[in-house]
Length: 174
Image (tube, rainbow, N blue to C red; front, top):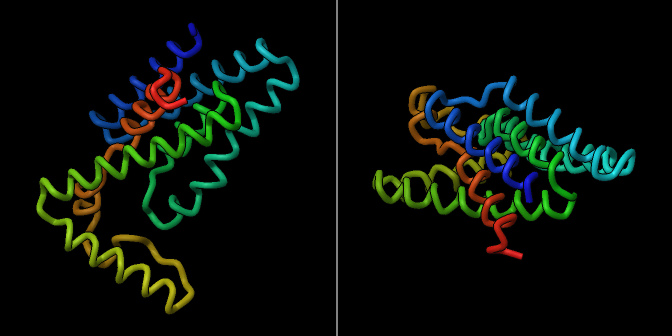
């Protein structure tokens, strides 16, 4: 239970950083990874370390394509990788799924509040059609808005990650 509290604190601080500074500082991620790997070795020795390294790798492998097309930030991926240090492989995948569901709900409400749901949905459909038609990936959002527009339209994903882990580890979704 104590390790869950440490993980919750790591994620809460990361969420505050993301909301306040629009980034999650690498020093914080490194501290989380060192703490998580230390915990994994203490808990399971070499086997615990291997499991933690695999759990760290899963979010990176699954989410790297989203980073490459500008749909997810590097800090979010590194944060999810650090979460893997504290959790089993199965728990990491489940928390990843819950986090994306919460992120989708946040995005839906943000689009409804900004009254741009149909505009965003049309852009998504045209993006998918173009990528499927040309067979070439491109940055998501390039034609739609400049850098300021992309920052305005995004959600701070560290918050859904925090909530996803709290929901799962708190016992609401087991």
